[in-house]
Image (tube, rainbow, N blue to C red; front, top):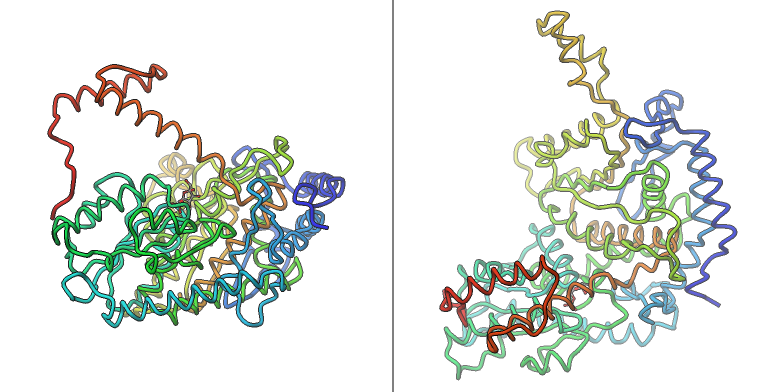
Length: 577
Ligand code: F6P
């Protein structure tokens, strides 16, 4: 019987951690940045098979982790840890519909959303599968109606633009995938508004025609402040242009697990597409939350995205630990954080269309595993989730890569690269790929002081000048990275890539013994925000304070109130173009 709290034998896990620590002490040396280090260059020199030994393939993705800080002893200790943590048992529990999100009493079934007919999901998911199929049919029909112009704006003109209003999981996944699949776009133009900062909505609506703009209001809970305020302002914008008596119902669709709340907001029941509490927000792009993706690239491509993810699901369930891409990525993360002492992790997609992948992975990883207590509620004995960040290459090379090469932090990097472009423009894509290769090589092999000095002397420097400058030109190298390459960024490959990271995050949560599927840490700030807003309202209308906050909050609040009372006319009730 699955027990979410005592998932694996803690004696086995403790023993595996101890063995890993012992192997690390035996195999690693003191590193450049106060952390431990493996001499990866020496490991390459000693093992002619190293590249193939640490390369794997699944679902169209090639993983090369030979540049990471692994050797046979460390790898074996890491695999023992994965076994002791019982990742496979935990994965089976997730796929078979156990309520593994025990702090919210919820199942975790995002994989059911992309399960094909040969799915390994057990019969326990049948009700979910039927629900999914029904909503899929409705979504496919909506996409068709919007594309064909049958569903159109209040003046009878076909929609040209879609604005998705949502935040967090109701924004990042759909926005990232929509951009990633730009080569597959239909004639609809997609826009994403997330921030409560009015500039986000105002700037977006500026160039849009109200007659031809469709809004998707995406919120799992339908209580999120940012989304509801932006949705209200969008409706006002439309009313301002169309007139308050005009029926604007065709301009709004909603996606939510709270159909009643969406209806109460004023969206017609036929235009509300359900999702369910068994899909976490950051795992929800496969649900109706993915509607903007389907509108952008068509239903066939949206399904292909799900099929790619389903291949990775099968791989995650079936492949042995040593061959299992999500498990391998997770073990490299554990190695980086808990052995090498890395606090951050760089994600570097060499694909401009994947520019939003780091932001998506930030939520996926850090909202899932940014936790300080284990599943029992006890303080973790060791570090958990690293800080995830990154940007598309080659842009990052002209900015933060300096720190990756010569800074004082150990920052393992994931290089992601499609080998072919959708836009084969002369040799530009070849330059992109060679830059990716060059960065990974430079991180590993670096440049010694001897080489640096030789170059300086060859360039005409005096011996004294060369001695002075050489230390500044040294790149110590030996900085771990991995490469994920694939033929092209297609819907299938992208689906597999996203599912790979989803399962990696899950596998790490199992090893760290945290619940990856709740996010209680985000609630306090929301509650305080509400209480400060209530106080502002009180001071506005009663001209006196009801609550006093801490001195710092109070000072800023008073600055805000003073400015507001001096410029009363500045708040605008509605938007106009
Ligand atoms: O505040 C965090 C969060 O709850 C995320 O987990 C979620 O993806 C986001 O807000 C948006 O929530 P909703 O889809 O309910 O509007």
